[in-house]
Length: 357
Image 1 (cartoon, rainbow, N blue to C red):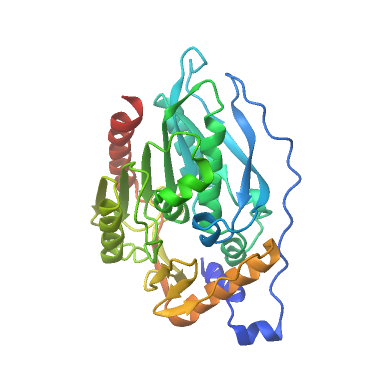
Image 2 (tube, rainbow, N blue to C red; image 1 turned 135 degrees about the vertical axis):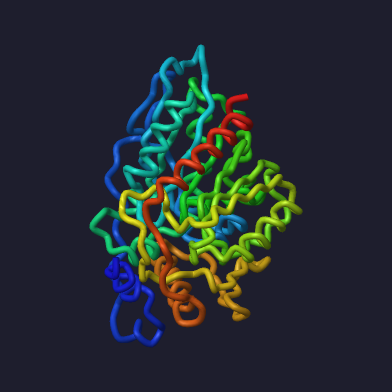
């Protein structure tokens, strides 16, 4: 696990270090098959159109044409789902470690077993990130804003599927994906990305760090439920409460469950342990009205009209600034079967109340 910290440090170097050496090259987009033509029995590997914003500025203030991106997803359908018998659906966003068999894939199958279609979205693969890509490079190449774009693109895609109920599509995400799930409540983003289809009916944030504030003044109106561990230092619980209170005031019903002895990533197959990776929880990152970021009181201007390569270098600058000024090291992460079981009980309640009824 210490390799994660080393790899991250190699990416998030300061501006002085950047003058001495160049960052790793930006990976190319993959050569994916054509966009999937949807029918009532479409299942398994699917491909749909998205964009790569790179930063939230270009989701809330769409000043430029965003680069088209093809995304791969894995769609699980319940038995009997068809155009004559449509079912609810859940879009599933992965964490910063990528898609895990024990988590994202397992929940795709869990959904199908409980009468809900599950679409696991691979935001990393869509932008050239593979299992061999060092951890730090992954989060530099693909931002949580990219995951938000893919979430809404998945919503548009599922609205074309005859076996899916358009009004009953939820969104859930883990850690990095949890941040994106929460951010997707912002009505500006919904309006810019998917205004022609119904918004998500439910948002589930699994231990998504709360260090950034989009200053959302209006949500889509959908409910948000968060699940966090009191021993997970990547989640500043006070900061999470503040953000959730703001979202409540912006129009959404908000619920939060804190498991007293849980850490981060309780669905993972790896043993529970302290992981010495960089931790953004102490940072205070605020999106200003003009799309610039304020990090712990210091404003960082987000340039306009950037291409993908330039956005990557700007992302490195943001991460480097956070590493230098506010990040801390490490938090508890790993398998916790008891918390996993409790969280699944809540998941059953949330999906029953908001998707299956």
